[in-house]
Amino acid sequence: MSCPTAVLGAGIIGVSTAYYLSQHQDPATIHLVEPSPELFSSASGFAGGFLAKHWFGPSLSALGVLSFEEHRRLAEEHDGRKAWGYSATTCVSYAASASAHDSQARGDDWLRSGTSRADAAPVVLDSLSGKSPTWLRRTEGDHIELISDEGTTAQVDPLLLCQFLLRECLKRGVKLHHPAKPVAVSTGENNELAGIRIIDTKSSAERELPCTRLVITAGSWTGQVFQILFSKSKLQVPIKSLAGHSLVLKSPRWHAGLEKNGCHALFTTHNEDFCPELFSRVNGDIYFAGLNSSTLPLPDPAEGKSTPYPENLAQLRQAARDILGSGSGTAEGDGDLEIVREGLCFRPITSWGAPIISKIRDQDLGAGMATKPGEGGVFIAAGHGPWGIAMSLGTGVVLAEMVQGREPSADVSGLAFDGDRMRELYAN
Image (tube, rainbow, N blue to C red; front, top):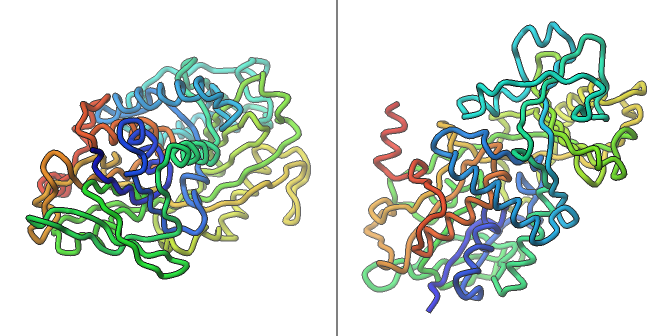
């Protein structure tokens, strides 16, 4: 008999987890709960979708390889190129002038800091190289370096991937409760977790879901959800948010007919203000982001998609004109660039730079609450930062295995989190 399981948060980590859970238990016993009126309205739908195999430190290296290979396998099995824009990607670092290069500041530094790829030897490219992006406006004295090995970086459209995973879950029989928010847990014999109460945010109707396994994958809101459900716990789940503005662009120098030349991930700097990230996609879009902030207030997820800040969008648009445009962009236009979409999303982060993928000990639930031995548990997966899409499938695989008591496919012991671990992290 399958143990009833509730997954709180239907972003890419949540739908990935539900997808892999449904391969090994009755899907009808799996409940996805999502409060936002619009699905995938934060990082899961507005991220860049860049995938890397080896850009991770020791605690994440095994998960990084597992997730990258799972992205490749799923794309091959379900025509991911057509369904969600999966494509191998050439990764480059670009400096607009020799002086920028001489400063040794690189656009990908914040991603690679402390990782196993940080000391990789780059290869300088010229403008005629087949590995140089055709859509980049080159300037005299600029400098471009190849910073990825063939077959180790790729690209997806994360919104389309999320939609595919959710369709597969629903097709199998997973239950989606949307828009709905969790408000309380209920217990049975021996004060063991037995269910969760949710409220439909449109009708205000309440419903009790049977649940002996509870998985919190609520992104930047994970700590809030845990505190609501386990208000007497002394454990604080320190998930913060990193807000990021983005644009999706069209350029005449990149369109669907050119994808045979290969997609690119480009990291650069702009006037020492911020580090733009550009990802070309097989459908002819160019994703432009990199303007991040840890100070923007985290909105209520029930309010839906966040409204971008005009001054931040203006800064992005100017950078896009400088890096990609060929015409004279104005406040009313962007030269020959077309703005397809503007976005603001909130990535979940931790202060130590690695996510939490962990079962929460019963003694950390508070009020003497327990979970049914061998059949229950409370689990958390959040804090992936800029690597949420890249790590999504591997996290789903491993978390489903942990929840169902199977041997994990990758060692994530370094990502465990409990009261003792929290004190250790903050002591350092």
